Length: 397
Image (cartoon, rainbow, N blue to C red; front, side):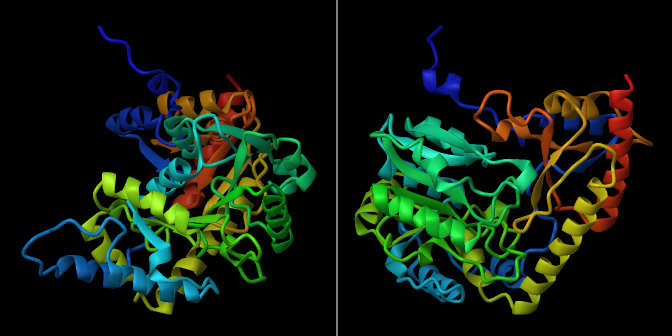
């Protein structure tokens, strides 16, 4: 039998989805599973997007341009202007989800063996994209005790060598919910400028920044306009994960020219997804406010409830809809599997993502899980009860 590629053997499994078979088996036994493991919003997609989907009048569902429809990119210019991000349509390249935007950024900017520095815990698929492109991830560890704040610039500098080509940040952060401050971003700006690095900025959660100060994008950092590549997506902004529409955004024309070649090779981003996404830009402010307020209420419910459980600690996330939680267990992978395979309380259990999958450092995050507060409040309250019962039973074995 022919041997598979080395890449296929080193590609990491998703910490978010790898326990899915256990959840399926639990449901087949009649157990209700509270899904705290995945960032799949349950809030409605804007009616404007749903109406556009229902009333498509095209007679042919054709290829779109490789960079996405001009009309959609023009409307995106107006959307970004609301965040003081000033662009032209040609600086926006529409992708098949934010995932493809990260892949294109890596392929356009990094050679095999080049290094990218990423604060950990980090969105696990970054490691997979690096594996696919041959890039090497160097992680800099952040800590739950200080809310996963960015380490000092000096800690970043210790990792920089002749192979370092980029820094990647996710702001607001998945999985921690951390929102980086203006001061942190300015320090990164100076570092990127000093060493002439790329700054990849995943900003798909910008709608969900809960600090009183205005949200700051990497695209607003002066002096590194040619270094910044922003990653975006409509998945979480409009609860449209399934339409697979994202964007790679940069003012660097050389990057755009390179990305065009990769985009042409995959032909085009989803036509129907772009139709829905373009219409969704017209969602009224009332839609965004209702979603924003709901996530704040869910965050407060979950985090306050978690910190009342003996031995459990969660910092208060200031963005996105995730938190990384420290539990009184030695092996969160085993605990999360056990919750699905061996435990239920009154016919219910909880599904979480072990945090080990969000760290590249061996052994890190063994007592942590990531939780997403994408369930309605009554379900979050019930999930907290089930989690506390699970911890009691697990540690009493």
